[in-house]
Amino acid sequence: MGMFLIVLAVLGGTGSSDAGLASPEIKASLSAVADTFVASNRSDQVFGAAEGLWVGYDDDGGYEKERIFIRFDGASIPAGAQIESAQLRLYLGNSTGSDPTMRMTVHRVTEPWEEAALTWNDQIPWVVIGSEATLDVSTAFGWQQWDVTALLWDWMIMPPADGTIGFRLMGDESEGQHERAFWSKDCTVVGCDEKRPLLDVTYTTGRGIWLPLMMNRWPAPPDLPLKGGCAYPRGN
Image (tube, rainbow, N blue to C red; front, side, top):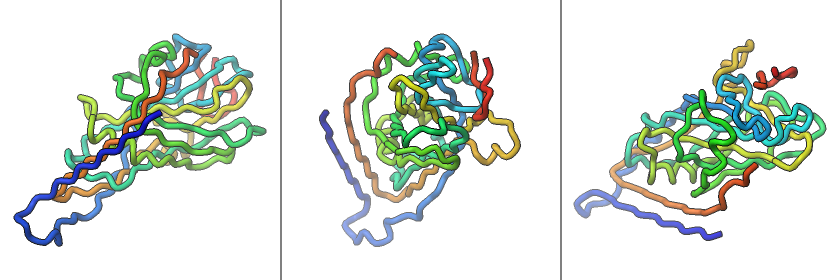
């Protein structure tokens, strides 16, 4: 595994002091425009309308490996902005009670996808290139937060044509019963309107242009009845 870091700094001006170049930080909280999960043992099934986003391995229900896909609209972040920080925030609403802490990894998704059509089979050939963010998630309900700043740096360098910011979330996919469920943008239960996926971004728009590019290459992901929300029973 190789890592390359390139930082290009271009500062405008006429040779005078850099004082005054700094711009105030701008904070944006982006709501998901699309989210879904896919399951290896429901390889042609679409879960785009599900109220819960499931990840891990479901042995009891027979869904087996599960992965989450989320997309945000990045149009409000101007070209040339300097990303200071970016946090992907999901609200955990269910989990396998006896499960130990689960390591979950977020990668950026550059392929186009639609929540009303994405299946497990669609994402099998996708190759992951770029930075990653990891977090050890317990079984306690509440907000979970991934530092995806490096992924946003990658996005600033090579954004997709539609300007959206897409992520894939993976957990423990070994056989057994270990799942986590996060509330989706489509949740309807009382109180969940404040528990939907968010991407909190802090950036500046000064005269400088700062372009960090971090490139990691991982191998392609292994070939690996609709669930309800984060509560059991979970549908057919």
